[in-house]
Image (cartoon, rainbow, N blue to C red):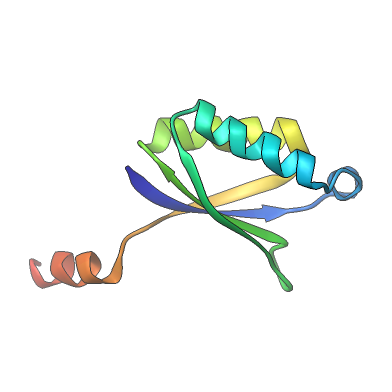
Length: 94
């Protein structure tokens, strides 16, 4: 499993649907594509939301991102996260 940060930006319509019920549906969608929602945070700044998810790979990330956009109206951009100890090891091998 890989860890991904999914940064969300609300649109006008997606703001209206904010609720615990929608969050549970989003978590179920991530689980359906083989992943796990590790944590989620509302943000103040350029992005409105970050989901930290574990997913098997890029294909499942794509399914989660598009599925969540359809479900919520939130636009997502994503980045794979590498634990810093592993990152340090990878860089030391160059």
